[in-house]
Length: 362
Image (spheres, rainbow, N blue to C red):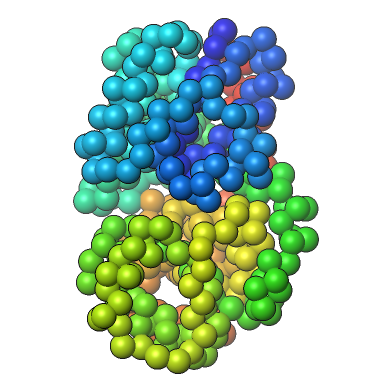
C-alpha cells in the first residue's frame, strides 16, 4: 500500500482519526498519508483548534464546503473530492463516523474504484429519520473494510448482509485520544477557571436539529434555568444552537438560577469540564462515549442511541426527546447509577494500533 487518504470534516472526526494517523505512520512508515479537510465544520473552535491541540497534521487539501442542506453538503464534498482522488490516486480512503462528509467520501471513492475503510462501522440507532443513521448504513454497505468499536456492531452488520470477513473489531479510537491526552486535560482545572466547583455543576451540549431547530429549544432552555436553581449549569453553545436561541428569545420566560451560556471551548478544556462535572446532559453520540470512559454520569436527551453499550455499562441514561425530564437530573445524580459502571471491551487506548497492524499485515 503506497498511499492512504483520510477524509475529515467535523470535530469528532479529528478526535477519532488523530491517533489512527499517528499509528499508521509508525506501523507503515513507507506509506504516504494524505489528509483532506472537507470544512463541514468551518468555525475555528469546531475544527481548526484540532490542528493545534491534537497535533493533527495540516490538511493537504481543504474542500471548504461550509454549511448548507444535507444534499448541498454531500454534493459539494463529492464534487470537490473527485479531482483530489484523481490527483492523489490513493490505495485506500479512510472515513470515520457518520457525517455527510463520510458518506460523500465513501460514494466518491467507490465510484472511482478506490477501496474504503470505515472507522466506527456498525453503529445503529434504528431511527432513519436521523441523517447520521442513513449515512452509517450506506457507508457500511459500500466499504471494503469495516472497523467496529463495540460488540453489537458485528451483529448489526451481519444482519444487513455484510460479509463477516470484511469486519474487524478493533475498539474505540476516540478513547485512544482520551488516553493519550489524559495527563494534559486532568491538570487543566477548567472548571475552577470558570468559577465552578469540581463535581458541582451540570455540563450541557446540545446540537441536533430535532432538539435545537424547533419548539423544543425554548422548552429545553427553560428546563435548564429551573435545574440551575439547584445546581450550576454550564452550556458551551454550538454556533447554530446559539443562533436559534436568539430567534427563540422572546418565547423564554425562565428567570433566576445559574445558567451560564458560553462560547465553544477548546477540546482539552472541554475534556477537563467533562471529567470534573457532576453529570453531562447531551444529544451527542461521541460525548456518550467520552463520559463512559471518564466515569461521568451522562443523560442523553434523545429517544434512542446508536451507542447502546454506554447504557448497558451504566454510565448513560436515555431521557427521551423530552425537555420536561431535565427536571429529574439533580435527583438522578444524587441517586447514582443502578449498577456499578464499567468500560466496554477494547476501549483501552490501543484501537488505532490494532487498525494500523491489520492494514500493515495486508
